[in-house]
Image (tube, rainbow, N blue to C red; front, side, top):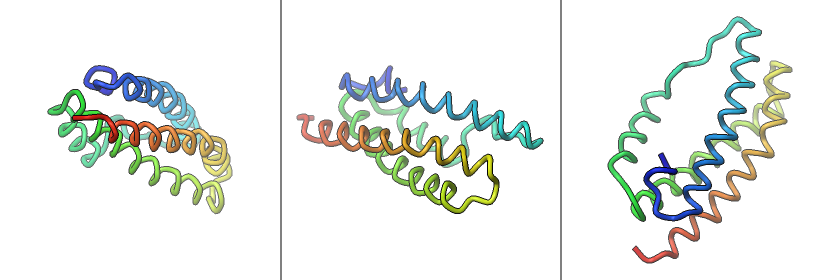
Length: 124
């Protein structure tokens, strides 16, 4: 969505990287789950769908600000959850996955914060 609706090139680049990195991590997690006889949800949850619906109504600089604000909040939450799982998770495979994925999420958070700061400085 960011690749199509963003005005700022860095926001588009960030969105592209999120698709690439998260798709890779999701596929790895899907394989771990399948090995345990579990199936991951095939669609985003209600809260994510609601956020996507809101974002669909925005474009340009307004989209940039809303998207990057959401990305910062979302990645802070993700980093905290992955830190918890990497440190005290009960399942060894999931614990290892969290530890392996955590540095990428931390990089995403730093990039999201930097891009968000830049977007906020831009004139509406």
